[in-house]
Image 1 (cartoon, rainbow over the protein chains, first blue to last red):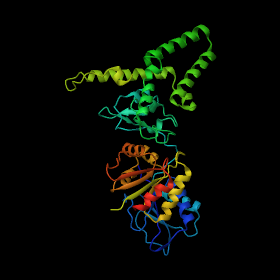
Image 2 (cartoon, rainbow over the protein chains, first blue to last red):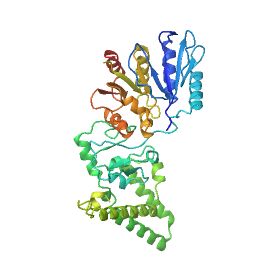
Image 3 (tube, chains in turn green, orange):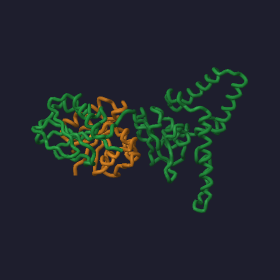
Image 4 (cartoon, rainbow over the protein chains, first blue to last red):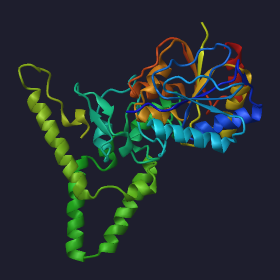
Length: 288
Length: 108
């Protein structure tokens, strides 16, 4: 991955200071434009150089000598829009990475709390979660996550899943209190939420739906029922409507369940080998 | 040894009160202290931006962003865990701009 462009806003020997408003507007515009900005001052420490392309901005008394990898722009006569445009031009020309383009919405695991129960992996329908080589849960596909949907954090029994941009705590990273743990524990059993055994429930609902279609041929009634159920689930887990609208079909969920069961069977088989003498995990331990 | 300052602008969401982040940025700029600023730590973490490593390294750092638990695990998720000692996180979602500025200016 390319490093991002580092913009250095210089005010010091060999340059004139910026006006306060001009400084603030320049800093703010660059950050809103997705740039990383360093403001060195009075010999104070800043992050070390790391070989990323640098754009040096300032009101220089005379043009500073260029160095490899360092572009220089004099701010004299440039308004804020032109400064940002210049930074964009340097970013593109140097091949530096462009940040932004999406609302960075994805789960972050608090490993001080996580017990590796896999409820999140089982629950998420968008394959955001996976496991590493040591079977430890991790977030693998951040961009698969549905913006503004915190549902997986709602099913985590340990309140270990954060969405830093969520509106309220403890999901936003606020301190987890005892009452939060109790409240989440009431919601965690997703199987119970859907009526006991999740997969049995799905099979039953699928079968019911087929019967309904075959006997009544009443498609609109079935759709209304699905809409009602989804609305209820959405309300309980704070899932946005647009996420509910993009949920997979019952067949997709069933296929996913089959894949999860196959994985479990494989894990159970491997756990019976000579090397791994631990007891095979149960379906409950895997959260399915 | 001086403490580094890292400011997160939380550019891609509106969860930090805009008046707080603007006030902190304005006062940081005017204060004459050195600092690094990034557009959005969440975005960098999601992309496992290598720049996070350089921001996490280098000794004591005061991070002006959001909830400390979120900041800590965002760095961890990007493979750039923050050191256990010498890290202080100031929370722009809950703290007053004035209080944060006082801390940032008191021990530059």
